[in-house]
Amino acid sequence: MKISSAATALLAAVLLSGCVSSAWEKTESVPGGRLYVPKVYAPLLPGSIYPNKNVPVPTKNRPAMVVACPPKGDCREKEILDQAAQRGIVVLVARGAEAAIAPRQEVDLTRTGTLIVTSASLKVEATPPLKAESFPSSPSKKILLATLHMAESPATPDGAVLKLYAPDARGRLPREAFRDAVEWLAGELNAH
Image (tube, rainbow, N blue to C red):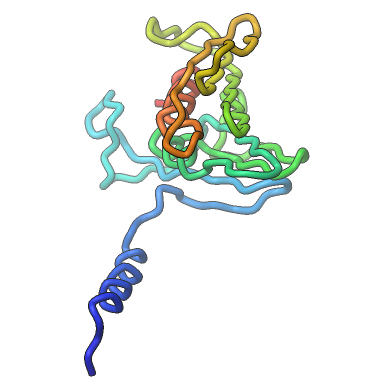
């Protein structure tokens, strides 16, 4: 029996796809959305921000982010979830107005932010920690707006940071906008 090279490649892809480890300790359906709890690891060295992927630790008191997706269209969840998992942020992808993060051991509700996705922009709002340490590199603003370059800059609320991006090949916000938005939120929520 002869197997074509396309069939062999397909079989190899199917077998290898099961070998990839998920960045999420668990995912679950909650009222109004889906909750993603990241895997968290001990630091590589004491005080380091780099994780030792050989030493998992329980996910407790992590910052959280609620992602509000548009009712129709592409929410770009993969970009958001990839970036949030790398920073140990619990994510609720909201599908309805009733979505909210309930109190649970994995989440520190005093460190919560929102990321609102539209077709051409992102709006990120941070609720700062009550006992926030002050980092000189951390922005003092609590709102980040990421949008496409346009002839006229959009109106920005007081205290907002505005970042403009060139569209990707499909005319959408580039992947970097999502990385920057999650990174900014992680800094605001002291997600380290």
